[in-house]
Figure (tube, rainbow, N blue to C red):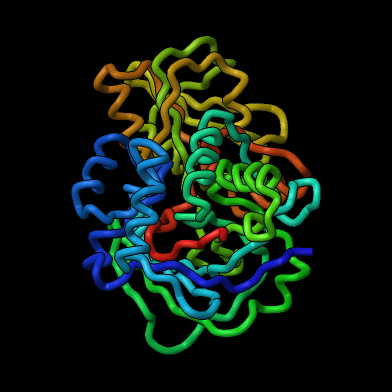
Length: 360
């Protein structure tokens, strides 16, 4: 049984300045250049907490900002509704909604929260040090809820644009919908942070550390989309029987996206030529590619970026993939399986800095 509840949020106060200068994308999508840019936006930008120079410095700022009323804790618990209006890489405008609550973390074996991607130890080590230092969740994770939730009415309490996405936040009184008690959730983004929360609760043992801030995103909405994550490959070993085509890589990608998903398939672009590579087993495209010798792999949601890297000579090859469907992600998680890293690209990312959750 899932345990979800409202929480007393910590939020930026008026003294911290305009909210546009304080929010940022989540820590794991910021490179060094982006991190530096957000750090200069404001001495109180959330990146000072999510990507600090060291955890002790973040803990010092966290205490100081609360003491100076730059961060203020709500008097009463609440659930929140987050609405994000965005234009995706496909050029289509959509709106995605989700409910922000505190969720009790449970081992995957309990069946309450299911993963869909593999994790790595190193990112979890850094997140655990930060969680120990702050005793607070400074950004939420993104969970899929295979059901529907009712949106609130009235005007939002807060509106802020970040990276071209319009984020609106409503405060809701009362308890979360009772149907969530019988629900299970699939992690869309935040596998490392969820497993970090489990580890922290195991060593801390307090009731407060058993909860983390999550956004429950209903799957029954048009605004929930998954975009592909293409592979840029510095060095490519053998590839099984690629079929050369006489079309551009973009045309080939559009063709395989229009076809039925009976077999895994990907577009291979190298030496200015376009190929199709197809498997013969019922598996996802990203999993199929793992059988090849791919070295120096990087990822991008934009096909033109992957192709350009090959044309510039920065990479030997690019693989253009279809995005998995929401149904495929839920099915993989439901079977207790996981996808390769970077199999999904849920867009937009959740903003950091709208709400914080104390664990004391």
